[in-house]
Every structure is written in C-alpha cells, then in structure tokens.
Image (cartoon, rainbow, N blue to C red; front, side, top):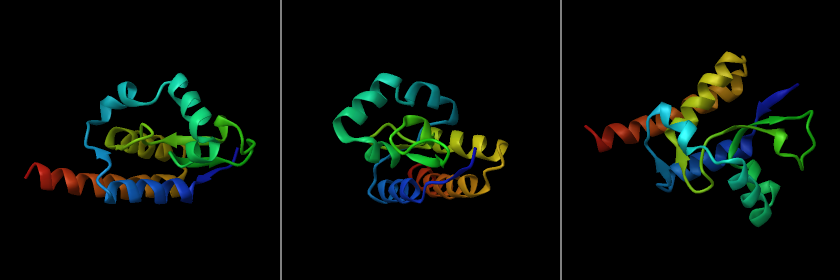
Length: 121
C-alpha cells in the first residue's frame, strides 16, 4: 500500500483555516466529531467523491479513485477543520512513517495552535 500526501486535501485544509472554518477542540474529541459512515455516504451522494477526497490528507494509490477506501487521514466534518482530527492524523501518520502526511498535519496543527493561543492568551 502506497499512501501519500493528498496535496488537494492539504490545500483545502489550509484554506478552510485561513477562512476561519475550524474548531479548536482537544485531541480526544475526534471519536465524537469524526463523521459517521452515514454522514460520509450522505456527503458523497450530495457532493461526489471528489469533494469527499478534499477532506483527507492521504491517498492510497492502490485503491480506485471512486472508492472511499482510497482516502485516508480525515481532518474535518465536511464543514470545518477540527484540531482533534488534525492531531489524530499527525499521530497516526507518524506511527505509520508517512512522513509527508505527518509533516502536513504538523503544519496544520501549528496553524491551529497559533489561533488557539490568540484566542486564549
């Protein structure tokens, strides 16, 4: 399995953060904030797999482009970037030695933590 950085998803996450579409939650919140399978399927039905792909930092090139399994390391709820999702992606990518994804997630993490510090000096 070759999982690499989804540049499009990474750009999308940065743009969302720059546009103020983020949640500064704690790491442990991802299990509650991560979209359910039904929410994923509903999103794909409404917006297509291409839009779904933008909400992930990784791509598994061994999976077909039209399959959910191709897209790894989700970071948001199809509306906003969640700090907890970014942290989860960063940790899991590091554990699996996906350095490009870990680095991208760390950058997003830094962006969110800078915003968190501004809001909670």
